[in-house]
Figure (tube, rainbow, N blue to C red):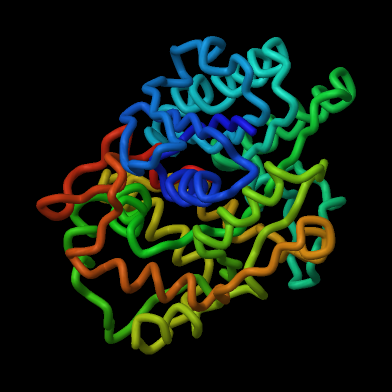
Length: 348
């Protein structure tokens, strides 16, 4: 089986490429990224491409499955740019895959695609995917859900799988994730800090998490099997302020959501942080996901809990922790985010 993986040097992509390369059912992995490299394995071929500009038709020849993980979070201040890469680039990639006769499209959707829910009752994959439209991330993920709806109807011969994952953590991606969501100055302050005296946290915020290696196992099962449709991927129930505080050895300080919104809006307006306040609004609206379908149809069970995935994120604050791939490598400590780094750390 020949598999092409986009976003192959990222937070999820690096783990997926490793997992696929070690699977006996896979004969070759084409690892596509803007800055290729990383895993040196006889079954992996690296290729350089930018989905916003490049045509992958040549790379898709005789490919059995496309695993599409590439994603640009930045620049959040220029949503037209991320739309061009994430949506227009993805649509062009899907079209090329269909034209090339690729048998399966396995797409990195997200909990962020789901419609809002205000309680902790877990939703199945039938819950609507009309994200709160405050952030480019949710709008783009939801739009691609509609695109894939159309592909399923128009091209039933193509097996379409969507993994709607929770927040993805692993130790080696911590620094890049900090740069994307906290910005360079705050990221530099946090590196090496594994204990905080107090951790302010939006009062109603809760989120599920999954370790990148466990998510990679789900992608592998979806790629080499015969599953179709959407799958929720998360390691257990939601993590709240107390769980985050415990991970940092801190005292939880729940703050009103309105105060968190105001603080983030002020930081964004003053360019102290790169995170659009609309992304916080989206995060506050996310439902809890039921993962029964992934367990029953993919045979997927995480080896780490959501809290253990969070612990890996905190452990990654050690200044020496960095991935081996070009986009996750972090020689010399924190540096300002680049588009390549942003794409890599945010993939999936």
